[in-house]
Image 1 (cartoon, rainbow, N blue to C red):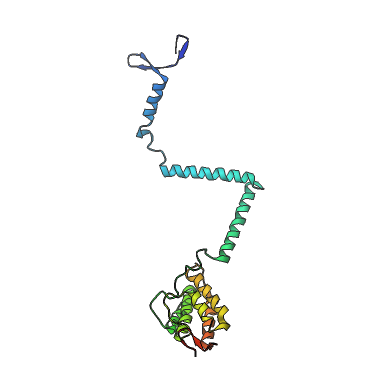
Image 2 (image 1 turned 90 degrees about the vertical axis):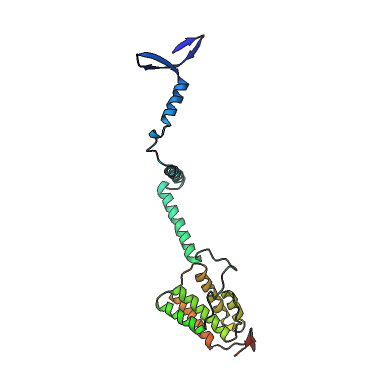
Length: 229
């Protein structure tokens, strides 16, 4: 350290060969040290960018949990209870409402393949039901029901018709079954487009409706696309 003109200057003394001291100011020495430490050889074992990001994320989660547990009644245990209650409520809503992916008016058409007879759809539905594939069984039975109404001229064959449209149109010549038709259409849409899972009881309800409609005569003298039976 040297004092010149009343000002104090700090010097770093480095000895080189021959025991000759070399005075280096602090700032250049720091820069030299930083350049030396920035070499790759000193960072070969450093965590990569992803690992550093994950570490920061988990630090944030830990800080958040600590702050919430301090504010929640009962501390960490109270926070766990609150989280479990929220999860249980969400699970109950999910089970009651199903997957929230069905948008009214955005469902697809009832028939997604080439034209087949009602008998063919019924046979396919029974095959799925025997194997316990209730989703497929419900869809095929609904298609059989609508195709049967078309074959009886109670509905006019129309490509692109949805299950809701078919139920609404069929409810006019078959008013006694209008409510059941709307329920069947909703179940079809929920299974086909809403992510819901059908079961045996759902298929049996649809099968019973299909058979009841086969035995029911329409109440109108004329229907869309033809003359009533």
